Amino acid sequence: MNRRPFVLVAAVLGALASAAFALPNLPPNPVTETINAQVFHEKGRRFVTAAEAPTRGRTAFVLPSWIPKDATDVRIRAHTDGQARLIRFTLGATPLDGPQCTAGTAKPMSGPRPAARWWPGDTGAEERAECRDVHQYRVAVRGRHVYAWTDGTLSPDAARTPAGQAGAPSGR
Image (cartoon, rainbow, N blue to C red; front, top):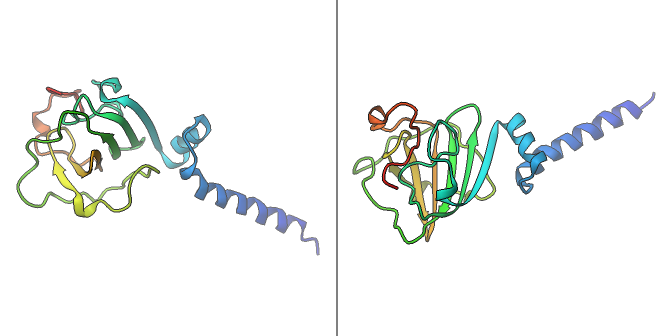
């Protein structure tokens, strides 16, 4: 019996499985970004400052209005087939403060969360709700680093946001 085809199939399957595990941990480059967009339906962008990010439109990379304009090292990872996204940034001189959703526990968000190497492990115990934008975000602050994610759940204030202004800054 010729085992060559079975060995070849096993080798190809092993290579594909290895690539599937390694791909999310490779540094960003055109190849990994294309594969992430096509296979995992995720895209990522990085901005040196929040001021460099787009400010209008329905793009996944428009920052929420509550992110300070002087924030630096802004990283965004977004699902291309929905509203879920992760945001990480470093605070500048402007503190992250202001009203949150409500006093008490925020409405739970159960949708899918994109994956990123720069996202810390479990932030659940530190998360607070932030609803001053189109989408409700969960926000965790660790030192000067801020981690925020949304699954696309609309903020209670979303009805008051003009159409086409998703994430548009208001007084940043």
